[in-house]
Length: 141
Image 1 (spheres, rainbow, N blue to C red):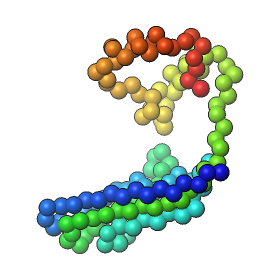
Image 2 (cartoon, helix red, strand yellow):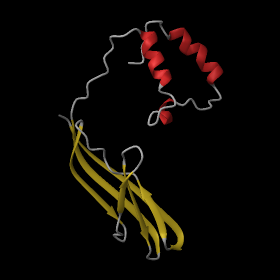
Image 3 (tube, rainbow, N blue to C red):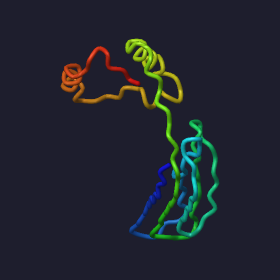
Image 4 (spheres, rainbow, N blue to C red):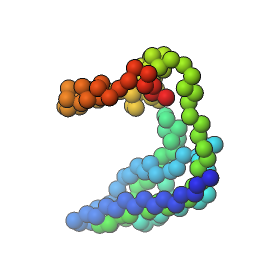
């Protein structure tokens, strides 16, 4: 079970003093059977109260307002986690069926953001390269 120590620092520096700075932070680690959070410290300049909620995708999100005049704000997130092995999907069905299953998920929330093909200017150049390397038996699993 590997243990990871992670630090993320966000720093805002302003030319002059600002106030009533409204912020949203998405720095909370996922807690599930594959990841155990040992410690999480979140330090924000001015020590504002952070209100948290769970978003549509199940992520913990924080919001706060820093009301004191300031020209520098830092958000420092430090955490220690232990990860547990995640089993891979079973790869025991035909590749065409796996690709079809993936294709059918493209409009299903919460997968839509990950499976939606976005505009890519170089797609016409990239597609022949990928197709030349791809084998019929290749699977997405």
